[in-house]
Length: 454
Image 1 (cartoon, rainbow, N blue to C red):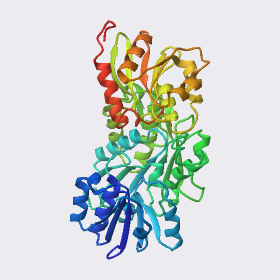
Image 2: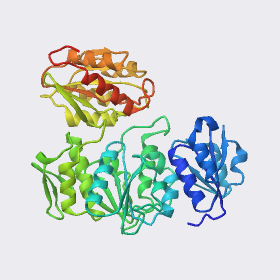
Image 3: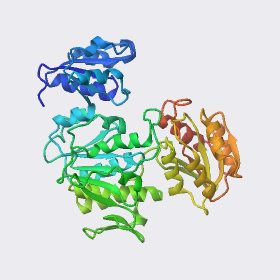
Image 4: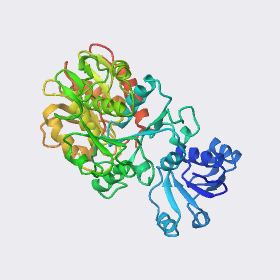
């Protein structure tokens, strides 16, 4: 892709927008970056951009800023603005940051999307590729912007970029062509941005849009929702994992790859929960398709545990396990945590609540009836959750702080139970991020004394 002397507008000066602007400037484009914030709010990034020759257009999305653009690059946090349609009507491309980066990358790309589990699967695949001796970049929605991979150590034909991709990042991709693309699941999320689950799923399915028969699509077996978004039969070659007939699946006490005969005992898997067994199956299949060795795959599953705030066991106190799944910011993720960590013989005390993201909490409540002991609610969405959990015949308590939630959960839990922080909501009413929420939870749990005092 040649952008020399081209007028490019980057909309959104978050981490990925800044990375895209710097990449474009390095490649010789005339770059303007546009954001709602002030120069002071951008902080050090403002000076960094200007030193690279990037012009700043701040404090609004004025139409004049878009008039001379020959290419527009949109950061994932920017909602679909009406002016984008006007720009496209003039024949100007409007693309996402990951699409921009993919047009420059020499390294093949492995892309992972889905409502839940994508960070865990991305991390596993990245480790499997690294341990196979391949120069490997791991990033995207997980952390480091894909634009930062361009011209990096792994940006070579024998390297690989393993990239977590959100629906926001995938809304405007056209030629990005992963050699392996995974769609792990689709459940209601971000319905404050999308008019329906179908629209949300279609955004996710863009990960397959440029693939052909020489590329691979990895999907969960037996998932009718995901199957509706699978690539057409003349598109990517489809591969299925999990279920009773996936290429890679759980068979008795082991994960097995039916194509190669590879086998891994579940007793050696570092990741906790049934949902993570499925995540491991997805990672094994994708990594094998991307060229990882069986030895590297085995070593990764044996040595790599869960990510922070994702089904993370904090400690066991008086026979009760305390698990931080603060990353469960939607109902599907909280439901997966319950499925993986609670059972009729291991009841859960659930700590939930935060900022509502749209969708119904009823599926969570229905499952909780089978595996729950009590629920502690907090944050703005507490009344909505209380409505969904009403009528179950289980205790419902409210808390004004995480410390109070932990204290109430302790009083409700019994030996053999699990206390699970799986909020099913975003965190921004009370915390800076899901990670901050998880940290506060962990601090409160670590402050508990054995024997009932706190």
